[in-house]
Image 1 (tube, one colour):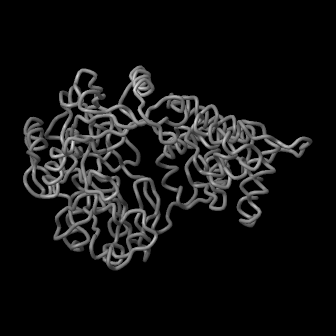
Image 2 (cartoon, helix red, strand yellow; image 1 turned 90 degrees about the vertical axis):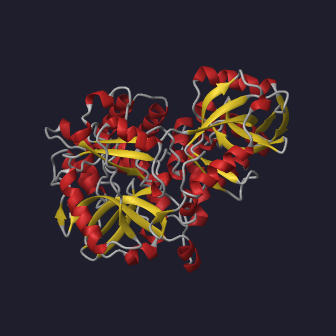
Image 3 (cartoon, helix red, strand yellow; image 1 turned 135 degrees about the horizontal axis):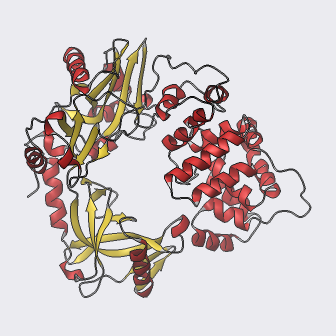
Length: 544
């Protein structure tokens, strides 16, 4: 457990991608089986324990110390695992050996739910502060060490080079869904001690190909427009739909199976192959707002009423397997022809084809992107550029695919409330609720916690502390009226109706674009501007 705890601690303090890769590589190379396998499963999010919840940890700590003092500590630190690990008062005389990582995993899997609190309490007594922190992170599944599942798999793949054979992250992802922690057969293959694990199981997830954001100032000068095709980038969730060998599955972009949440869709798909596309709510082949799709997401069970009101479908982008033939090595143009044939034969209300955007020059495409034609194109997030000769490669290769998202919407809003952040921001008021004017008063329309520099954060934090008018637990109300207030220029990707927000609207992906120290609060935007934008989006037309 000590080595795993040290790894998490180093990762949380390291910002460099390459340094994180080296840290994970060195740990996996030195740690024995099965410890490293469980560590890798934890880093990739594939190790979960349903019996150990944050509320249980809080109760354990509050049984050992004053609950009010713990609440203050938690509010200051901002992270439950870190707070508990620092304040935990161990019992005098405890000298049992600290548990190893495999012992923790095995015990959590086999111990009855009612006995879990006593088990965790004993571990907290035997571990040091760093070990307690790592153990609590592990059992709650909230590592938050700045490492994606893809990066962890990349680090694992790099072990192959130590033993004289190159293994790519996409190679690991190809076999990943046929493996179970602690991945003994995976490490045997990476270290040249065993055969490559089989990737031939029907219904397996294939690594998805991702795009790079276009750099308008650099990329267009070196790219030939004739070498690329363009299609709309739809505002849904990216999925991989599979029907092969009698197995039908639906995966998210990260490889999580979500078939059970969309039984109506899975029953309607009758092709034989693997498709890459966008999950959308479609009514008469027209794209509905993202808010409609949200009514279907994160549901454990789907009623007939909900399924009928929000009919989901797949708008296909690409094809990975066609009637049992792996076509990822074909060019995009060849795969597109295969995709058109498959959708032509099996398409319908639940499956259609993402249309191409004809263009002859980058200037023409820029004009189309800025002013998309009426209809579905108005619901698109922007355009995708795909090189005609590109194979389908898992990961995010530089050059074959680019995304050119539409310009973000902007609104000038007034800061109303502030709250401390988490982790390194736990000492700063870094999360801001902002509002616009409605009938002479401010109404909240969103919350943002990104888009500013560290220096700007320090100034924002001072502004909050200097102009606090009321406190509501961890939240501070900031002075905001016609005569005084801080205006934030907020960028966001879209709007949707919401019954949970007083304003009736909710923003998608809001972030601080600019801090308007120069603008009077009275000149911030009115709610009418957002309502006009929302109506335009719902009607499938460009905003005025």
